[in-house]
Length: 161
Length: 225
Image (cartoon, rainbow over all chains, first blue to last red; front, top):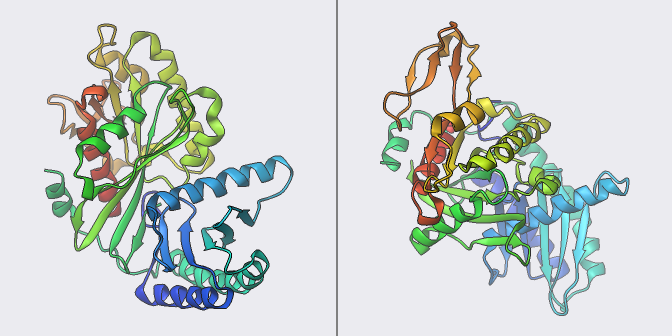
């Protein structure tokens, strides 16, 4: 795959399946909101209460947080930390790795407990891992959706005139 | 590693501004932030020290328009220029789609420029990326200063060109931004070389900032087309 080519993309069906898995998870553990962020800092999906912060900035900082912690893990002889927990006075967040490419972030408050979030997260991480592995496998096999920018050179030129 | 989101009809791409410390990377982002319409950009995030030196990165998302019904959203990052922050610098390069090298034109910063360029090649190689095969532009910043080196000296030191080995690419490609200069050309020795596009800038006043951003963004989208 040439550098710069879209290395993964997902369809509306993938998006529907991901959203359904996350909605079920939120209902089961009574958390407020779940966000999926890819490791390069791009927001993939948001489910649950609409966040009252800038989700793009949040996604970038999440990826940076995870990357920095990966390096810390290596310094102490671990391959990575597959989950992180940040505790606040009212709001807390739990982050977990999905298929080494995506990060699931769950925001929750005192309507639930860390134990319940962690317990329910395990199953969700497994089902999302399966879902994303299918998405990535499809991208790697070259059977991804057709390149939407193919032949769009003129349109790109116009955009920058 | 661009991401196409068919659900929200967005193409997300990552552009990293790289270069020596105090070269003007953060200033580039601040100018973009200040001059684009507020509804086409997000927040400017800076992870900086108390003395406003970049510690981890600066980040700014901007929308540059719509192509085929897809919003083109560019995530602009800077890296910390100071030599000892290499670990965080490397992390930012992960999944990059396009690079802007912001060089400092001042004569006494030549060595720092060369060190940063070498460091960029090394860090990219560690991810398995080949800088010569991806969208990459150079910005020579601080052109207004009296101690600025001539462009030809900066080009010779930082952008001497890489060998073109693919016979299909051995044809002269003129530089669209500089009349009389070529991006791909044959040297008197017979060897074909390609250079990165370059732009002159005075980032503090905004001169050249958008030319650079447009130049790299266009290359990124063309790489996808």
